[in-house]
Amino acid sequence: MNIATTTEFICFISLSAIVIVGSLGVILLANIVYSAFLLGGVFMAVAGLYLLLNASFVAAAQVLVYVGAVNVLILFAIMLVNKKEELKPVKGLQIRRVLSAGVCAGLLALLFQVDLTTPWALPGPEAIGEEAIVRIGEHLFTDYLLPFELASVLLLMAMIGAIVLARRDVLVSDVVTGESVDQSLIEKTGAPFLIDKSSS
Amino acid sequence: MFEISVGPVTLQAYLVLASILFCIGVWGLINSRNAVRVLMSIELMLNAVNINLMAFSSYLDGNLIRGQVFTVFVITVAAAEAAVGLAILLSLYRNRVTIDMESFNLLRW
Image 1 (cartoon, chains in turn yellow, orange):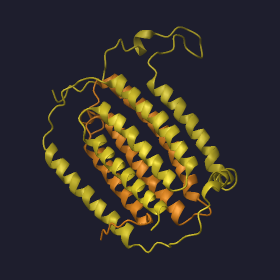
Image 2 (image 1 turned 90 degrees about the vertical axis):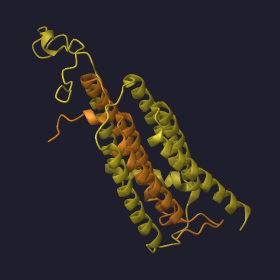
Image 3 (image 1 turned 60 degrees about the vertical axis):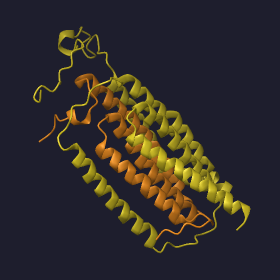
Image 4 (image 1 turned 120 degrees about the vertical axis):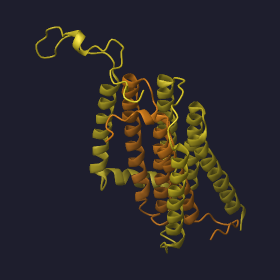
């Protein structure tokens, strides 16, 4: 028992507490804005766990992508759709919550059983520590080259798909013939056309 | 089953943490009525998986660290998923003027 081990232990316990309490807050808090900021805190704590596991590159990627991009995107979405609305009461919501909590507890017990009883092949080979970033680069350009290239295609598809799904304006003229498009057909004049009228 | 003593952090500790985070994410995914919160729960579950991969990579595969490469790919896919998911959410909101998950029942049997 030396001071490095104790420090690692204390860091792990505090980061785990942040992760668990923060994620409980994300799903339980009534205000969605608090949830979004707590989610950023959870992502930062997970990045800290990666640092504890000798993975500085992945920790940096986690901070850049999750905290810098995904969390900001979620905040933008909250800003765009933030409308105070009274949620309609749904029959049997409490029963559903309790039932799903039971199912999740069962899943948790199952996962704990697997985690704690499986004879993992410990100790594994010696960790390479700071050379990890070199090794990741080697992996990405040798045996994981195809997934790496596919990831670029996936990101391009996601970008185009997000633009197409979220755009509001329509084309003024037809792309093929160049004639002006009948705007009355495609313009929605701000009136949503899919409002549910069956239940009211 | 749980003996907590100050000592080197074990692989099982990381696995238990990831399991708890995953189950919290599943519960939130099922029970959230706000569609943005559903997306947040999915991100929580993806993070739980990433913690698992990183722990295995560090403890069982310290030389080849394939888990870290997988984590980088998962982060990439999660970013793409968040972008497309929020775009779908925006277009849903534009058409139905609500983000209550209970009102999205167009495809209900």
